[in-house]
Amino acid sequence: MEKKSKTYLTLGLMVLGAGLIYFLATNVVPRMFVTLTKAAPATIVSLNDSYVLGERILAKADGADKCVVNVFIMDASGKGVAGKGVSLTGIDGISPEVRATDKDGKASFNIVSSEEGTFPLEATVDGAPVGRSVRVTFRN
Image (tube, rainbow, N blue to C red):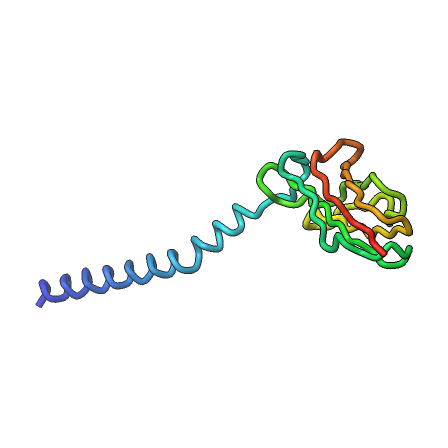
């Protein structure tokens, strides 16, 4: 009888151990990794990884219809950098003149013109050229 009790005790401890391992593997360890690996906000701008996109690059040259250009300021790992001052140059009528990037590193600009033509726009972040451009076109 004593041998059977030891066998049941050993078997019970093995089942209890397996249950503990399962609980740790499915609950504790994943939460720990999420806590330990939470990403810090991006703060260092990578000009090579930043880019300029035209959301709407064709508009009427009536001084009211607008082109929309988005500038994305990124770090080397591809995360957006918040709070950076971005400006566009290449045409009058850019609003706002300087825009701070949002939490995703995006700064959005509206451009209007009464003059017909295609205008290349260059972006700068905190005075440094991004090195990317986009062309907007205004027609009647």
